[in-house]
Length: 69
Image (cartoon, rainbow, N blue to C red):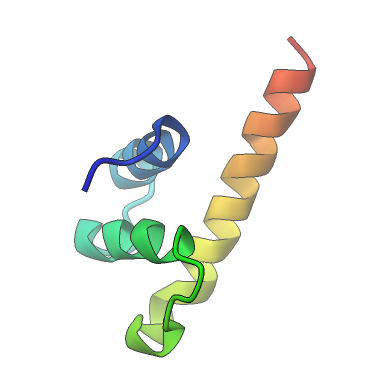
């Protein structure tokens, strides 16, 4: 699957700097977060909160950086 530029940036940033969980779970997370009706019961619960918090912080950083150029 090809990611959007922002999703690819999150994937690259996470897998190169944090990597608390395997790349395959990061990829699955990104794919699911972009689905309208993702079944989160299929995603490993031990990674969900960590990845969601990291993604929200990443996106807020991108938004903040965009507003403060």
